[in-house]
Length: 182
Image 1 (cartoon, rainbow, N blue to C red):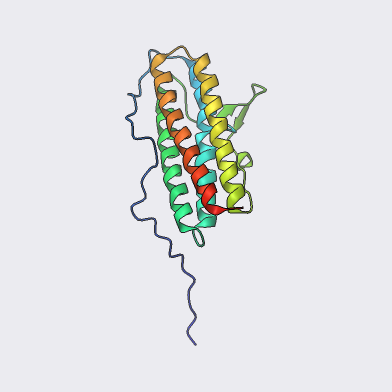
Image 2: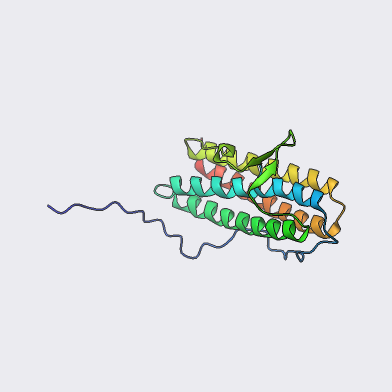
């Protein structure tokens, strides 16, 4: 008797980063500033960060791809946009004179390495989408807070452009939430 192999038939061919259809400003800084680099490291790999967003989206995409392929494809596209944000932040951190070492200062000022403890791993699609929306909203608040602390218009232009993607992601997630019912 021949054993059948289990297969995931969800195709991710052609999935592209999902982001606002606007160009990004150049990744440049007015000068080195380690304090600004430290703020961006929080956006890079803190509790609310692009690293956390990427990992949470990929985890959700993996868990949904067998039964909710269209949602999984959208989450992968959002994760790809978050990867681009991560790359842009990393480049800004280096331009500002910082280092990307997956360590960011927490609220108490102590450095902490990125950890999957930062993730929300709900058990169903509705809760996943709600957690993703909450994470995007928190990221926007954090970017806005950091922009108020950064006096470099070049850096702030990039952060403002990233915020547009995060807002677009919330809109998409709300749409997906409406499609999945209660």
